[in-house]
Structures are given as C-alpha cells and as structure tokens.
Length: 363
Image (tube, rainbow, N blue to C red; front, side, top):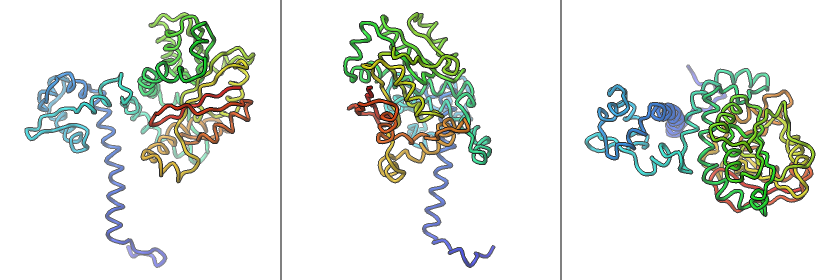
C-alpha cells in the first residue's frame, strides 16, 4: 500500500526500535502468564524445596507434571531472567527470586498480582463497553480469584509494616489501643489488617468495612479461624461507618483512589472519629502530573494499565464516580480533600516504601 502523501515515511532505525519496544510489552504479558502458571503449579516452590539445581525432568517429577511442558516453561523463565539455567540446563532460583516468588513472609513477595493476572486479562473483553459508556466495574467483577489475589498481595505488607512500623509512627495511637480503643479499617478487603490489630490489641474492638461480598466472606472465614471475638466485619452498604465521633483510629490502605465517592468517604471518616482521633491514610506514592510520575516511577506504565483494568474501573463503577484511578491521589490532592472533609492536621510519615505513601491525618 502506498504511503499517503500526508503521512511521513518512518525512519528505518526508529521503526526497528519502536517495533522492538512494542514486542517487549507482548513478551512481558506472555511471561506474566508463565509466572502465573509457575506459581499455580508449584514449580517455584518445588525448586526452592529441592535446595539444589534440578533438571527439567527432576522438577517435573517433584511437581507431578509432564517434563516436556516444564522444560518449555523453564526456557521462557530462563530467557526472561527469572530462573537460573546452567550449562547443563539445570534449573535454580536465586535468593532474590525466592524472596519474590516463594517466601510469602517477605516484604518483597509479589505473587499476589500474578494470582490476579488471568482475571485482569479477562476484563479486557469488558473494557470496550466501559470506554463507550464511561461506566466501569467493581472489584467483585474479578471473581474469587481476584479477591484471593488482592489478599495475597496485601498480606506481606501488613505483616511487615502495619504493626512494626505503621502504628508506632502515629502519635499516641498504640498506647490508646493497648488501653482499649475502637478501630475501623475502611476498605478492609479480606480482613488481614483487622485481624492483625485485633490480635495485637485484644482490649480494643476492631471493625472492617467493605462493599465486596467476596472479600467480606474471606474476612469472616479468617476471623472465625483465628477465633477473634473483638474483630467484626460489615457490608458498608448496609452498615456504614458510625457518625457519632466514637472511633479512636480509622485506617485506609490503598483504597481511597478506588472509591466512587472518595470525598464523601473522607467526610464520613471525619464524622466517625473522635476529635482527638487519628486517620492512617496509606495510598499510592503518586505525583502531581503525568510527567512527574513518568520521571520518578519506572512502573508508571504498569500502574496506568492496571488502573484501566482495576482501579479506575472501580472508581467509575457508578455513574457519578470520581474516577481518581491508581495514581490519582498525590499528596497535594489528598491533603486538600482531607481539609475539605474537616481535617486540620495532615502529616506525611517518614516511612520508606517503594509503592506507598503514609499520612497521619487528624481533626
């Protein structure tokens, strides 16, 4: 086909670089599917448990799988730099790979997002309608696997940061909870934070609020398994936050940017808190502009893409949704919205985290 007169011919060198760049994105998506399979089939765990390099046949035997499929999978993982393959084609995981792929107690553990991967990709089929109508989809659209993936993503963070770092950074909060206070975790998901706080502070009452039925079911199962009479879960659509200023602490973890009505939620949090109460606001470490996000965050493309498939979709799941999206709550906006909701003190906490920013917000 002849090039239209109004369309300049591509530079050959730039064309090759552009095409290579595009296909690296496709490689990443395909390799992500292989990571999901490696996790789901127990291949990483089997390699780690062996304690030595394994041939593809030995790995297949350990995982109860067919060798030919395992070998092709391993070649993908080796070529992608995720698996070590020696000159004899024996397979092993580096200590760093174990921390990210296997050890779910590590703060670097990342398999939760790959648990969600098939569900996120399935939503691509629904996206054309969202783009045409403007209306997105809530988290339950991603199904049980999506709820499990979110839970698995957050649990290492909660265990490594919430009790050891987060709560001690808040002025006087741990002492109040030791004496017996009332806590609400808004957007509680599967209840990990609620149960950790309820265990650590048995004299306090800890409530979790969410609108995801799938997440609340998982939360209640966790509460029963742990036998925590001071933990309670509520469907926020049926049982909203109290508005009587009775809470000592409210927490929100990476959920305000997902909400259809974040400003109204901030006002509800203010009404629920005592005048000397505290809101621990944790959200994405976003900047004020697209250009700043790109300059400061090497994962910006990933975050905007996940926003389309998940966060923005959730925040636009009602016709009048605010549509903040994954990187839609930088510190300046969070502070302005908190002030509009009636808060007067806003402090960024000195907690070093690659993804999240932490704020202490007070009436």
